Structure formats: C-alpha cells, structure tokens
Image 1 (cartoon, helix red, strand yellow):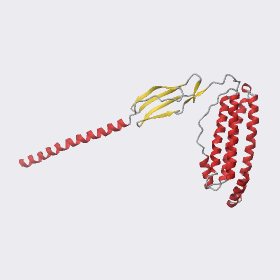
Image 2 (image 1 turned 60 degrees about the horizontal axis):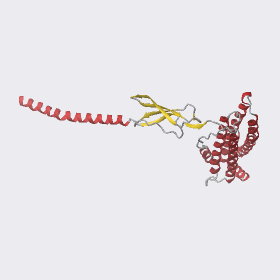
Image 3 (image 1 turned 180 degrees about the vertical axis):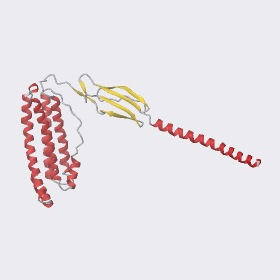
Image 4 (image 1 turned 45 degrees about the vertical axis):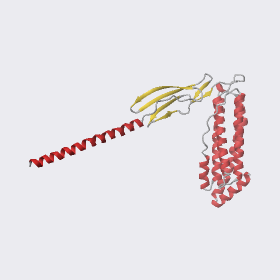
Length: 295
C-alpha cells in the first residue's frame, strides 16, 4: 500500500514538473504577442508636414492610451493667406499610422491685388467662384463630348455639340479671368473635382436614353451656373457693393449667353421627351435624327 502511494505521488510530481515549464513558456509567448500587437499600434515619431508654400507650426495636444494628437497651423508669407481660413490640420496616430483628421488640403494663396491697376471691385472672391464654375463646366463638357465618341456609343453629332459647348464655356472662363486682371484682382485657381458625368451617361446608355440624359444634365449644369451669375449681380446691386461696370459686363457677356443656351437645351430636351413618349423605337429614331441635326 505504501509502495503504491509512493508511486502515485512520484508520478504526480513528475507531471507537475513537466507542466510548469510549458505553462511558463506559453505565458511568455502570449505576452510577446500582446506586446508585439501593442508595439505595432505605435506610430513613428511625429514629423511636421511640409507645405508647398509657407510652413506648419505643430503642437502636441494629447498623448494617452488612445494615441497621439498633433495640431498644426499653416503660417503663410506676408503677401499670402491660408485657405481655408480655419487653417488648422489635426494629425492623429491611428493603428500605427499618422492620419489627417481635419482640413488635409490647407494651402497658402495670394491675397493682394495688383496695385498698378487696382480698382474698387465689389467681390473678387465671387468672381473667382464664377471662374471656377466655368472651369468645372468645361471639364464636364469635355468628358461628355468624348463619351459620345466611344466605339459603343458613336453619336458624332452629340460629340460635336458638346465640344462646341466646351469651347464656348472655356471662352467664358477666360473672359472672367481677363476681367479679374483688368480690375486689379488676383486669380485664385482651385482644384477641379473629377467629372461625374461619365457615370450618369453610362446609366443613360444602358437605359437606351443617353441623348436625353446628356441634354438634361447639361441643362441642369447651365441652370446652376446661371444661379452663380445671378447671385453675383444681386450682391452688386446693393448700395454698399454697387459696381455698374461689373454689372454691365456680367449681364451683357454672361447672362445673355446663359439665357440663350438654356433655352436651346430645353428645346432639345422637349423634343427627345416627345420621342420617348411615343415608344422605344421612336425614341431611338428621334435620337438618331437629332444626332444628324447637331452635326
């Protein structure tokens, strides 16, 4: 009996002696994994970002278990100003990487006028907004023109028509730029957004209504650009902003054209909708006939 107990306890001691080192090794391995994961979430030391013009002044705002946070302010040369005006960029350490949280595209832009020809201008900022609207329109019209030149679309009349709109709108944009310079303002170029018209036209093409969709889209864009001109003229008609020369220029060279082109696009939309109402085959024939007219 005593011999059996000795054998039993000896076996238990042997099992314990084998189990404890394995457990220690497993725990140390787990700790290494956890430590590795924690270390993987740490960002490299923060480096102040470089600005194309000017420089950033950065200050650490927070450092805790959730990560680091740095606030950077763009300092521009005396002749320039930051855009947007709230020129703070927030950088945060997230999952081992630095990421911009707010206003990642802050930049320095010119703020002065040309003193040699500087004249009282009602709103240089609104003129720059109008110029940007025109440039965005040209971007969309060029995309629309070459959509109709695709091998699976091939409507040369629509291609020619939207190329004409692109050229006319580009002339309008150049006219606004020339007028800004004439009045001693400063042209503020902005990044143009990617044209979204290709996706719209693709859906119209799949539905068999690409001509109608294109004309409706163009009419919508022209109406929106007309609102920008009306907003500018309304601003300048107020006594404190009254600028008769700029009013005349906008009404004579820009509003007159907008009225003409919106009427023209509405006529095309009405004709295509009439073909659509009489049946699918009639619409295809009508779209083909209009393509011949547009050539």
